[in-house]
Amino acid sequence: MTEPPFSPDDPAVRFGEALFETMRSEDGRVVSLSRHLERLLRSAQILGWSGVPGEAQLRAALRSALDEAAQRSLRIRLSASAGGRIAVETSRIPDAPAPEAVSIIGAWHRRRAIAEHKTTSYAANRLAHAHAVSLGAGHALLLDSRGHLGETAFANVICALDDVAVTPPARGLLPGVARQIALEAGVVAERELPPEAWGRASEIVAINALRGPMPIHRVDGRAVGESAPEELTALVSDLLVQEQAEAP
Image (cartoon, rainbow, N blue to C red; front, side, top):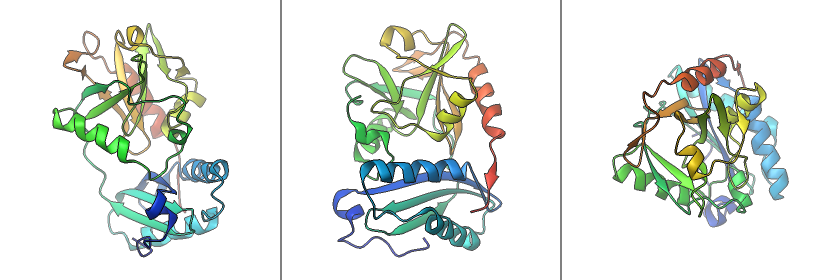
């Protein structure tokens, strides 16, 4: 960590008023760095957190952390508080989660606009994921009160339906960096996913910028599709490989 931990009176500690980005670094270069910083700073502006440090300070903190790191491939968590503090943590890239998921109805609220920003108020997501892990699954699928599919506890979701790849509109959901790349490329379209739609998907793929596409083979003990072809997984993986890495 390049900065001391946040002090007890910092808004990040007292109220969860901080933003974070989790990124992948290869040989001192950060994949999709500009996209991540743009999202963080845009959220700070929308939320009115004027004390969040600017881009130059964030890049300097990342440079310092990468200069100290010995590993070539790293998971980087950049946190910036409304109180003006920055913390950068580096660690190994985690193993892929188990390809099973558990659905949790009522865990996604589309009018909860704060969920559209990557804040450190993350307890609900962590509890949902812990519940899934306790049942032997690698993913928690967050559903609204009617069973519409939103996202997982730490990733966006794409479903293959009738040869079309769809992801829910980002209302009450985090607009992920990897998701945005897929949308811009025209590989994925936005569409509501009620239970009768996502329940018949031939593929369900969780996706985030750190791990890329993560296929889900079973949901609540039931197989996804007939043969889990992973064509969508391969397509998205090829797309993300083309994303540039840059030095801070």
